Image (cartoon, rainbow, N blue to C red):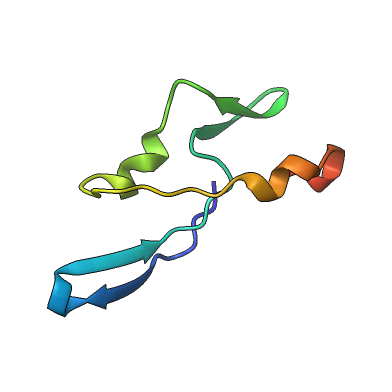
Length: 71
């Protein structure tokens, strides 16, 4: 899985920081003999989110894509 470096922004007067982490899936991807597969019961890649108070993810964009248009 390819992660972009987090983009961080802070609002120190309010003791708030915001991190933007772009990833295609919340679950893990693994390579196997048949290709790439989603591991639906594993979020090892989610370690970047440990310690966060709020997680917001946006998936609506992909609802209208099918076939090769999906990530």
